[in-house]
Length: 301
Image (cartoon, rainbow, N blue to C red; front, top):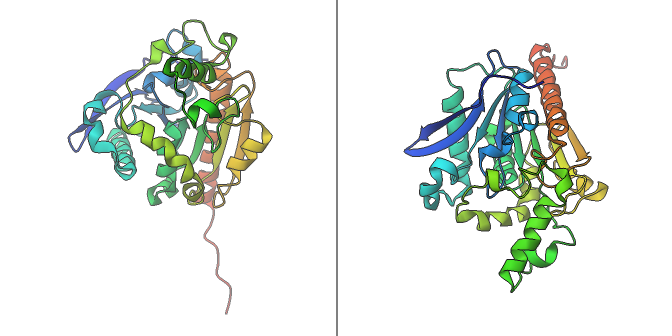
């Protein structure tokens, strides 16, 4: 099932900085999903071109979720202001302010759940680790990690004198074999976007990952594709990331079958989105149960 209502593009102004987005607005949403794309793309990542069944924006609204896919600060309309956005805290403030403006006059259901892919996980984890993040429903991060895949270390961490060969190898790691994706999507030309200069420096956030993760106090799901080749994958890698979220009340890991790095664009994207939305639904149920629970009685003296 996908929703026939259109995905609506827009721009919201935050302190003079325009932040672009794509959104699918549910009339009476179960919750709101804030979706944060990875590098070298924008919010189009979550609305797979030519394949509505693979679109998070369309699947989400069909199941009663409002989905807001924000062009991360420095992407889309805010690219000209990227030099002002090198401070991670500034990007967190902008994302929260944009969300506040977009949702101020709209229903939000049980609350806001954040989903992020690849480089977008940096912003998502920082948002969740922030005191404001304690009010989120939950967090899904995917296509990220602390250690690069053994076959990718040489060109991702050590560099490569042959730049063209390095780019070709990176493309191979990002996309894997073509059978995982629709041919029109494979390679990313249809969703490509200019990246801000700060993005390269922001990759060092993985060294902050443990400290940030330990401050996250909401349920977390971490997903990797079965054929992930940018980051270390498999049970040990999944368990390693899960172990960082020591303050989270619930941490779940997911190895998505028949998927590569770009989980939201492959033939299995719908299965992945349904799994994420199921987790968001669980988080919404937990939030409602917590609200409905009677206050705890203190011990008698």
